Image (cartoon, rainbow, N blue to C red; front, top):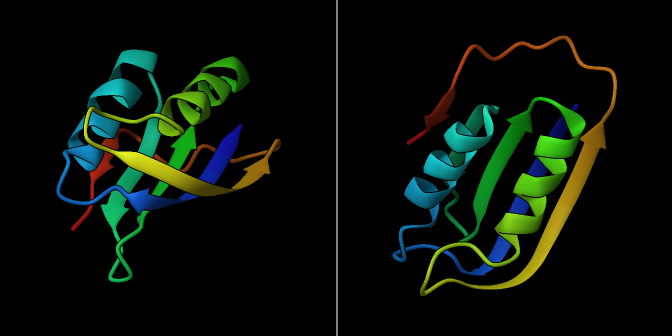
Length: 90
């Protein structure tokens, strides 16, 4: 399964990308996370459906200091596993 998220709120300057990176590695997910110019964070998670769902739930809270107001989520069930690891993109 793959999920593409755009996370809105206070999500930059609070360690959101690094915390997302660490949590994704703990769950064995592949993909990436990055800051966007509009102040949001964008992420793609790929892996076992239950792990991707757990990651999405985590994103609604994020690290201490984050205040998530909204998340746009697009899910794909049949994916071709194009990622080999999880990374922070700049």
